[in-house]
Length: 636
Image (cartoon, rainbow, N blue to C red; front, top):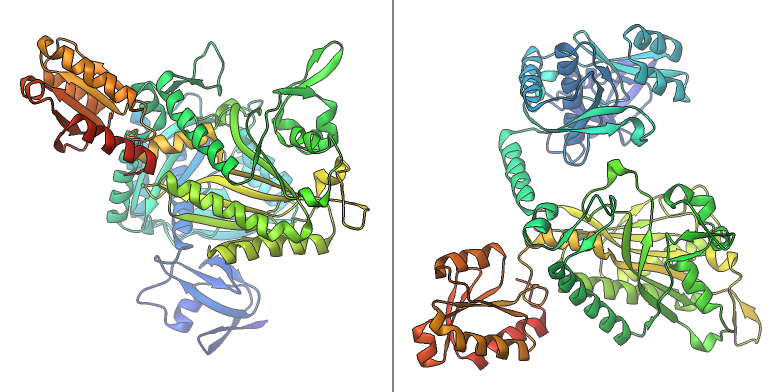
């Protein structure tokens, strides 16, 4: 059977089932040669059989979808290298990721650094062999038999769960893997790669399953891109919030307390206080009402809210008090709803905006906990807005305005924004979903923010906007979210009295600007590399004496700075001045005020900034400078 394939007005006829590679010759794609194709928008490799007609497009290395194809192939090269060096290894899964790729293996002992070096060397040999990656389609029975004979029990488990009757496998030399693809034409195209680390990972992320060894790597189409990435990786290690958190005495996670639970040290607590003070003041200024709610509640509350139906695996086990079951709260929203419901409401009161820095507790598997970024107890910068349908778009716009303002204050000006629409399973009518999605889109457009549609990724109770911030290293972090909820007002039978003197159902907006204080603090530490702007810095100035005879004036300066609202410390130790300056720089203190003979005689200050600038200022002049930076929240 013949099928027609077209490209830029040209059309060819090929046999159905022919590999995509035939189009390279048919359309003369030789210089450069594509690494894959798109047929009707679907990404296919050059070994995939073509079974339908349509418009085709060649995919070259500079295409955004090309890098995942390269990295997926690199993962197969990694798996082949491991199998050649460790024949007893059993294969898990090996996907491409945003930063590179990984592959999971069951092996008798953990991999070492020496193993990684040997595996990378073997990968280079496989690359030089230029094995074609050949795609085959097998029945499930054939595939199960193939992998059973090879002892690949994890692959057999995956095959049994595939709903289709046939599956695809890829071969390169003697190596074969269960895979949907797509892949590069041959292993010789995987040239700029690097293995990065190894870690333990439970099979399918469940600690009840065997722990496998996960090897991480990355790959690019050219060595310069790989070099630039590795340099960014080294910079990211230097900025790692866990490392800086210890060095700067900001926070810790102690075994005696438990994993995923944060101890805020005095210096970290100061940063948190500044964030919280700014957050509260700004919310009160914008018409929010501050509330506080308990850390536990009767478990039945979570039945009403629906969390026990949809979120039970992320909730801690209940506790019994007075023969009644209580629950550590995973969300703040039911409490805010009960505050709303404590009396009758009129349409004239709307919108009602409740805000809370509420600490919640969610069960996360130990394998995914990561410093401040993934924890079990955290404080959400939470708010819930109750409004009428005619107010929905304006309220969403106000939230977006607040989000953009907040993030700019902390130095984030670039974002990725996604509008997630109705999923397959949802509550409420299609009509109200369309209105809510339209309100979210209209608010984004009114604010002039570009966004992408994320179809079907809304939560069951309503559509949402997710905003990811870009840090100085170009990494994106999920922080802000705005969600429209039709479910909880229904479950709790919320109402207000309208102008017709009849009850009506309000619409509820859930929103968080920073996400959680813990995660946002971790992002800030890495974004600033621990060198917080003056308004956030735990210590804003340190007064350094050259000799003991300078102590009286140094104490006077430190007192005046403190009276001016500046967090200032005095370092009058008998150490050499150079040592004290270096130590202050390591602590990333913004200003070092040096007091020696000249300063005492002239009653002026020599000030060194952490950037290495030297200033000569009067005490009042210096206080005014620092207070201006604090008031204006100057970032860099």
